[in-house]
Length: 342
Image (cartoon, rainbow, N blue to C red; front, side, top):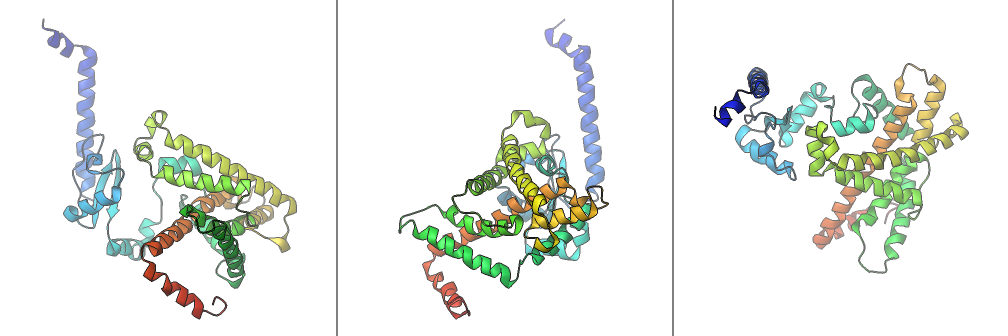
């Protein structure tokens, strides 16, 4: 008997081929049925879906290209996960404004499930998300966000930033130096105090924010989110979890300090506000948003995403004004005309 014949007649090989055929049949039948209810999109391949059509380093470019064929709303398969992609202002506006209730939940993303476990502000869903978001908006307004109180803090922080820039005496310096000021404003709300730019805790938090945000965009992290069972082969998610653990330890330290001095008449921070409500309701209260895990997760959300976006926007603003110096005079003229700023 020929070697290849004995190989094909092996019971294990026969069983494996039958199993593969069943899986392929199941995949194709599921794809055919579910596709009727979904926007159009490229036909997925087994196991990898449409990953062969995506530049994992520049997904935005790939989405723009695919929208030319399938329109501004189309379906993609990232591995075994099905997603709907919205491209362009009009498509996003219609989805978030006209059909907002259909888009309020977050999909289960492996790395954020590992970090937040369904808690916090940004990656929770249902009632815990609604209650945490509602409380957070009220709390940060009470602490001065959007009022003259925080405006005074911002002016004070600006003076520290100017002092830092002047310390370079006209020599080149890293653009991320500007991240310290907007981050400190957020930390005043969260922790009740500003940090000196050389404070070890502050530098650790800045480093952790920068590293985590950088790693979240790493191609291996995208692979982990599509195929989490391959996590043992990949490194970025482990590095992220290590930095998150360090950041949570700092948050918990401030929570312990807050509990020692907590008073209704002296709520100085978001942490104070959360823990005061926890004290009122007790750890066994019906609203789980004031339990310690959700307090940590909510503060962590604001430490990470609540600081990085503003800091990055400021860096891009400065970079663009450096590239187009004629634009610099416009905000300067606007500030000069504003009472108290000129």
